[in-house]
Length: 623
Image (cartoon, rainbow, N blue to C red; front, side):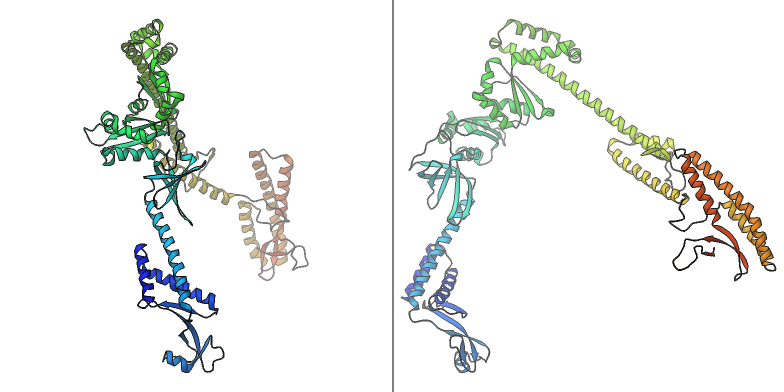
């Protein structure tokens, strides 16, 4: 029986394409779980299957101890050495503990595990098979028809055809054979979910590949497809090999190839048109079966094409409910505006009458417009002959070319004006930099060291003339960098020469005498020091008496200087001027000359702000 068990496992693994090692490993894990569930225990349990005999064995790990207290988790050293001679106290030993009736449990568990593995393997195989076929056509049988979807049997798998992917004119019956396009394949817990489609445009591509050998082997290429499922489709094809007719290859002899596809799609009309790299010809072909006279492209208006057709074919070009024009727009990717020959010719004549620029260009072709006007006035548009249609087409084409030429000239003039304006801006910035002025603030003149030296004015003009449009942006960046450097250096120079007016209460007063006053004081101190060595008190009195007129003069100079400064900046009022003058005089009074006995000489001292470290308000220190 046990050998039969292993033979059965091997046979199932072979039929279901399963690896025997994976199945045996899954069975062993399931047996260990079944033992815990049926016999209990929290021990470390492992199961093994003898591949030769097929017998299932259970092993429990027990701790080796001197004296056994719990025989389910512990084993004596003597018994452990009988199993494993290298056993020591504190180690672990795997002891076989297979129950007597464990064979039935093992067989039942193995059966469940194998069936589960088989189901999982089948689901994975189905998913892999149909995931590779996504984007292809499959053939199936209608199994069930519901209001929202149709279920198809694909053999081992089932697929669904949603309502949104069904052709509206089709009806489906159970047992009906149906070809569909595999839109998507997703993996679920119940197996792969396959979604089919009958309305996808790539279904028409796959059908053409099946029916037309030239498309399948690459001789003919499908450029684009526009489809309205169940009604009409347009296919643009091009030949990749000389001497091959792409349209004839797709249609087949007497239309046999295309007719098979039409029958498969339940009578859907298919127009096969030839692709052309010239958009005008391609758009004209896309409106087949209508005959196109003129195609005027207007890319600046959002890829719009104005198509002129004979009056008697206007309805054919538009199609039923605009279907032909709509499919042509999808096929080409351009918005198509269809006009009749009479309407387009009348508009051309109107442009010639009203637009003087066009009329001047058409001075040599006035006979064409005279004949066009006479044809429109004398005959019914539906009765135009081929020669008259050719004349109208020529008149429309001439006016269109004239408009395009005028538009190109206008754009060229506009670009030239923009280029000249940019050149003038660059020249103005260069001249500003050469003259030491910032182009950002022309009124500010920056002088002093650090200004970047550039070429002379004449050399700069020659340089700017040689600069082309591609180098203008780079030149502007260099000029802007030069301007930034000039401004930074000017700010540094101004900050060094700036005069700070500070109040007595905020910070310590600084030297307020001008340079001339400082020189006078230095000479005065040197003369007093010589006499102060013998008569300190007399020298001090004389020094103060002589220094007073000089300080008086200095105060007058400060007042004059302050007045001049305020005259230059006349925005301040008189009160502000007086306050600043008082501050100047107050700073002058904070200085005095005293005799320092420690140094034995006269020094200049200044008053400082009251400090908490001293009791006196005035604290004089040596300068």
